[in-house]
Picture 1 (cartoon, rainbow, N blue to C red):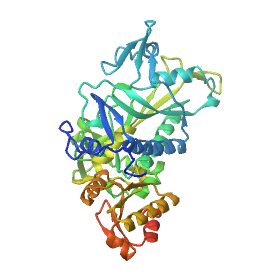
Picture 2: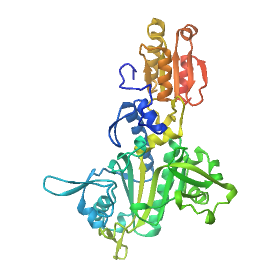
Picture 3: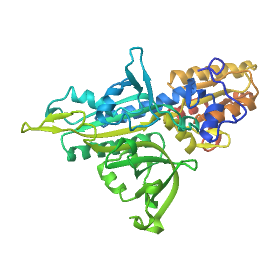
Picture 4: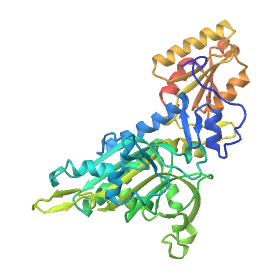
Length: 435
């Protein structure tokens, strides 16, 4: 994409309303614009990141055997009254009335709706287990929305729901999702710490949160220092044995940590700030019982389905990744979620040789499948370099008059700041190999 036509309204100054790095950088990098309190429009650069994160989540859910569907944003209040949660949920739920005086709500979560779908469709143990998920916008009327997409009112979320015949099957489904989450976050270049957690309004008696370690996190996370020895490769190849190992390496989040009864030795206990990006719950028959979600067992007995729920904050992850990966100059995107693979910078568009070389390299990048943001604007080099660092693409390929004469380009790795001179062929090979 040529920068001269790409809609990318960057900002030089830091917006006064932005209190944390991700909010500041997303606004300055032209990723989002606020529509109203806690509600944002996703501009092209931000939307590309959002879709890449969404696709990784989708692929790992599919790999774990979950099946994608799509439920509406608007739900009937009758379902929530049936489960007993309509009056208990509180003011975070946006309640509305249609023209026929039917009470509706903008869904903050989907336990009721998915349970109703299951109850009306599944009759036999032969149809179990099932795990259904969707990636859909949610709305929760936060009393004080802040920190940009980290704590907004409207957000994109993946929520999955498992149905099993018994507790043993439900635990297996739960652990299967645990493994999927470790893989999902590792693919995004993140180290996610799983911690025991309060199930909150969702309910249940087995619950884990997944936290990204960042100084701006809202939660205190306690874990064994041994956790930090796990490599990204190990997380990418996580299995049930790894989950069993990890259970001895973390304690809890926030006030749930009890120092006097902590299973982790004091000399190995570490405390960091964390950003919650995922939450999994096992809640048994909390929803299936009142909503009549029962199936016939092998003996013909009607058995209430055992359920679990598994959420990932897709839009929240955009902010969390930035909080965990930035510097004083801007964002540093992991390759897997970066909006483009590389920035191509023409330092002097008024120089015919520079432009011919840069245009040719842009065509070669496109032909090779390298998604490129080509800065062909007639701007000062300093402006282009500042924008490139702010946007944070993993690599920058710079074409200038001196390099054109020497037959080389400058190749910069954004995360380290390291630069080197390479031939065009070598630059393409590096980019295709993940640099």
